[in-house]
Length: 308
Image 1 (tube, helix red, strand yellow):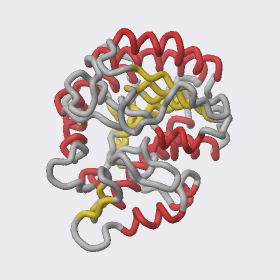
Image 2 (cartoon, rainbow, N blue to C red; image 1 turned 60 degrees about the vertical axis):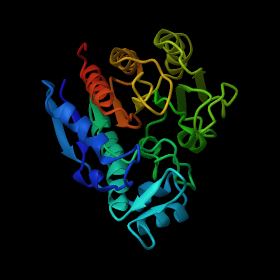
Image 3 (cartoon, rainbow, N blue to C red; image 1 turned 180 degrees about the vertical axis):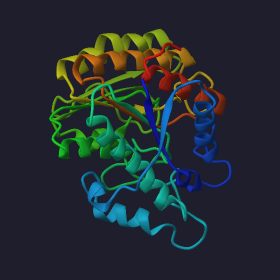
């Protein structure tokens, strides 16, 4: 299978300042890993999301604030973690536009899959607030675009080590979207308890620090994959964060590279059962560069239908 990869050089220009965990080297590591792999990849420049696209998910005040860029100085902090530089507006538009364009391409055929190698990440951004390194919620924008395109059931699977609070907040009253999420708890942002079920369309499966990879696999096998199967999505979206890796400095996960491949293989099987094989995945976290590069390559290899 040819897998389409959406990216853009502007995503490297989102400057978070010295010493920040979410820096342009992350994306360079992922791109290098994919470009030097033996995979057959169809590389595409990400377009910019439109204001109409963004308004499906975010409030106008947040959109205006992000697109205005920093007010004085090189970098402005929207919260203690989330930076806005002169390159951030275009980077955010390209990251969101990648996910939206990927949905259009994937929905135009069967067995189509896409990976969005972009930054800033998105799953913490709430309707009215940028937070947790995230400016716009890329995967939520993809889901909203799919609904606007006529898709009736969209599932979002999030395996980042941090809970996707923004995605949950956006869709917790939208029954056409199922959101399933495994994440470490306790950990930032402090949401994602199992009791948070939305309109019976949210399934959180938190795991404690230092939980074994097998324990997390069991959550997918026994809790989350059955929920996706019961929902029968017409499109599967993935928030692909690789910070549950045992080498990552921001959490206490115990994943190895092979565990991300395993989760991806299970999600591919779900998409083949219900969604005509159609998957769009977008990069979220992952802050240990060698582990991030290896894990992203394993994820994309599995999306291509190959074993790692």
